[in-house]
Length: 124
Length: 124
DNA sequence: TACCTATTGCGACTATTTCGCAATAAGTAA
DNA sequence: TTACTTATTGCGAAATAGTCGCAATAGGTA
Image (cartoon, rainbow over all chains, first blue to last red; front, side):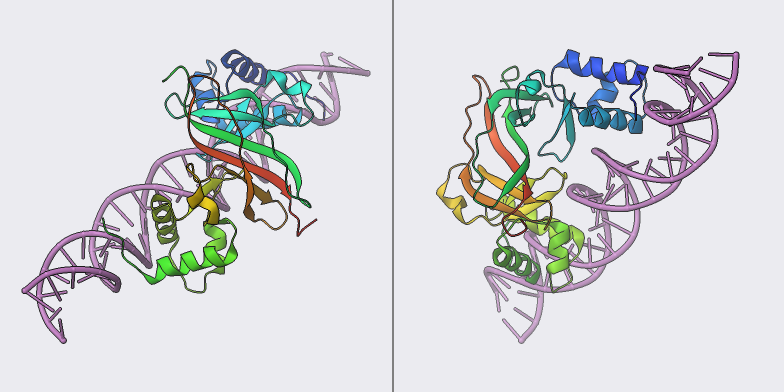
């Protein structure tokens, strides 16, 4: 299953890189200058996740948010950092702080999904 | 808006207390002996949340889970502890460990939603 | 240039959660 | 007990997010 370069992939990736925050499919679709189908956006994003270029967070609103995290490569578990979701500007950003936890004996943690919700620096 | 006692409320609350884990509306509906409407279950659960008897977690699957947390009263922010979601038995439980974080300056955290996903003690 | 197949767009579909409205019933007071 | 107020319920409809199958399109390679 070799990947191919397409305008859709490039547009979505550029948008994520430029924004620097985690975005929902909805936000991505609105900010895109090209028009891309809903299903395609999801497929592109999920492919990015599979390839480790992007990570996915699920916020308190139950929606998926996708972000290119610059520091991902440096860590073993890529997305074990906190995320901050601003209720005002509706964005999610990756916080530099890593999530510290020690699961009880017998619990095997495979992934971490930590979102702090509130008002961000720019909005307060 | 005074609350009234109804069989539906009692049934849902008893189930949550007996189970001791966080349950989705789906799981609640299946385990209930009485038949209660979907919408009613949601309304009952959300009322419990408003009253501080129950807290809500959103997991990586985007679904809402509700739990009576015994230790809630002892803390200021009620649900700032980790949750563990088992991919095998499909349950979510409250872990005793509190979430430690320090948001950057200017960020105002109002709520915390931290879910660790993996295989729980009973399933591994 | 031709070919293989990854990718796209479209439409339909599932699942979760919410909402409006009329009917029911819990709590209170007479 | 009876009457009354209104919180609560059930039902149907609807909003929203995300997925899937299929035919058409278009990268990449030979």
